[in-house]
Image (tube, rainbow, N blue to C red; front, top):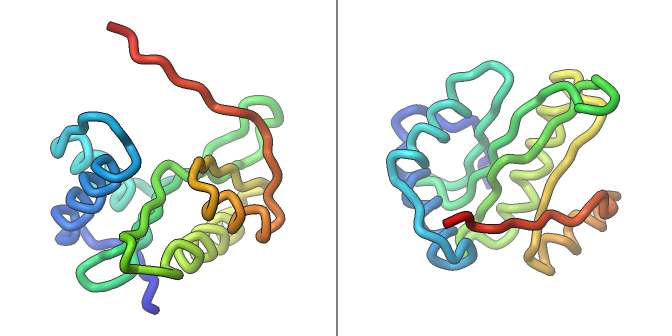
Amino acid sequence: MNVRLAALEEIPDLVELGMEFYRTEGCRDCSREALSRFAEAHIRDGDKVCFVSGKPPTGVICGVIAPHYLTGEPAAMKSAWFAHRNARGHGAALFRAFERWAVENGAKRVIASARNPRTLKLLSYGGYSQLEIVVSKDIP
């Protein structure tokens, strides 16, 4: 499978992947405009990255490197990760590409969140352990 950096012309496809994620797992309304801005920032900005798999893209992972708030060390944080159901195996390949990018760009730690049991199992096989539990609340 071909994992590569996303191109600006693929933003409409990335928006559709984001919409699919929210339909299947997000359980929330989402904005095509916000998804488009998010994808563009991860393609253009030097401290961010967006990898895709498939043509047109059927999988995507985005992330950023920033100083960790406690240690100051560069930490790579996954900000989006989704592969369409018919793209089995793409998620693992995308995450490996993200890890390589993190190492190549000086990250000392990779931080990723997940809730799908298969994704959590994949991460545990890769040596990841639970750091904290993330909670959320909508404010009316």
